[in-house]
Length: 324
Ligand code: TYM
Image 1 (tube, rainbow, N blue to C red):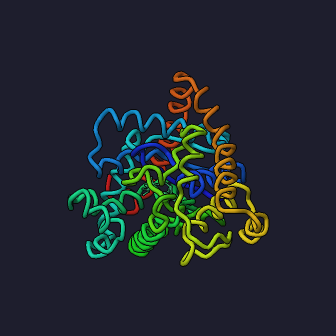
Image 2 (tube, rainbow, N blue to C red):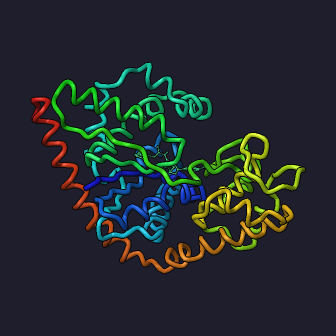
Image 3 (cartoon, rainbow, N blue to C red):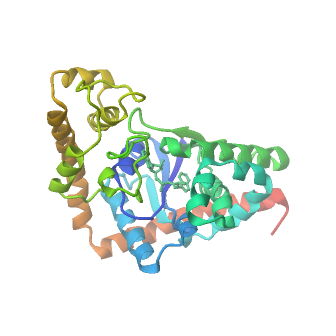
């Protein structure tokens, strides 16, 4: 049986990229025959030095989005990283299997170091990520494209540990959906859609109102050719909209192109906006109906399951290393 792990930072409102690039696939996998761990990785968010109350509410909201996203809790454990100290413990152990040069070469480190200053948390971030994945011996990691490099490093770290101390860890594989693995900003389609973009009109947040969603899509940047065809290089804006539609409708890109063949850009934008609204509606309904008590109870039960799994791995790792 596959063991799946993935995580999301509570660093602001969940956006459409998070949902289509990652959380949607978590929900799909959770209805298959696998054991799943989905984690709000709050320790990772500390690298951006968040304000205390923002972080608190972000942790709670992100948790609620996961609970509202259709993840099947029968075989999935949803928990908050900082409540399971074993993540940080394993991260220290694994840091001995990773070169400083490798960390310095990470694209996200280079990007983030320029905005947050170069503290060592930003540098060692991918080792904590490796620990997240390996603590439950996950062999499958559903993530968007921006996490590919971090996952490669996780595989190297696991292999090095195994070569030195015996076959403890599986070598995890990245998985992703067919479409939506790298959604771009609606306003700057050459940049990734992100929580903290300079232009918030380029990002669709999970709880944007219908009017706001329509407005954002109407003002999305396209091109002057008025042909609804997929070509990321020369038509990044329209290709992004095609990708959003195909991802939500589970439709081949070709079929989406055919369907909208004789549409004007303006009509197509509204149709994509309406598709997004229908997709987000049930998530918001569930989100708004989740009571604090219900959330707290799920969290308590899930943490126990996560702890059991993490402690088993830690015992094996300690035995292999000859410590404790
Ligand atoms: P984070 O919090 O930035 O994003 C959470 C998930 O959303 C995906 N994603 C996107 N997918 C498509 N298009 C986009 N524009 C887009 N933006 C974000 C991300 O690929 C991710 O899957 N380092 C991770 C969190 C993490 C993690 C882990 C993930 C920590 N430990 C262990 C997997 C396994 C991050 O910052 O994701």
